[in-house]
Image (cartoon, rainbow, N blue to C red; front, side, top):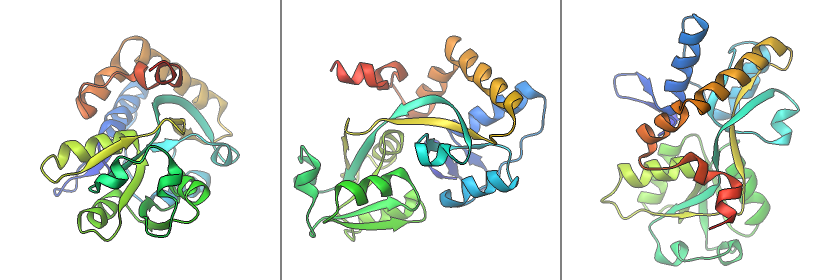
Length: 231
């Protein structure tokens, strides 16, 4: 519940976001009651493996290591890595090597592909894992880190929500981040249902409507790898 615009816990305790709207549509279509469980990101796949949850819908990138443990359906959204910073020098860096030195400190969500990316390509930088994105943004705001490495939807949300605080977002096409729905690997009927469900939402334009609601004037098709390569 701490990854706006995908998931966010309000002061009232209610959880909202693009992923929550999608989960509500799933439950309504299946005719079941939706129960939302908020937990740290690194606990999501273990919770799915143990049966504590039936589905993980939390801005989760489909990658090979996760896919060895659970099944994925999607992507329902394509993304890539981006940096959020308040420093012009970092904002104008045009390749990772310019950030790869000990003076660069970067916040990343613990257990995420952003942490993997940072430790793999920015080996000389100081990588600072955080428990949620709100904590990472606070570190950037207070100058305790130079930037936060995250996924494109998160960067969009931060710059919109903190428009007067001088945050700058750098979008990178160095990574392809397909965002999918994680499911138990031993339930082929459920996997097939989810494939058909997401395909239907895409074809009738509901996925685009959700993206517009939560991320503004953004076109999902333009976020696909083929479209980005043509820019």
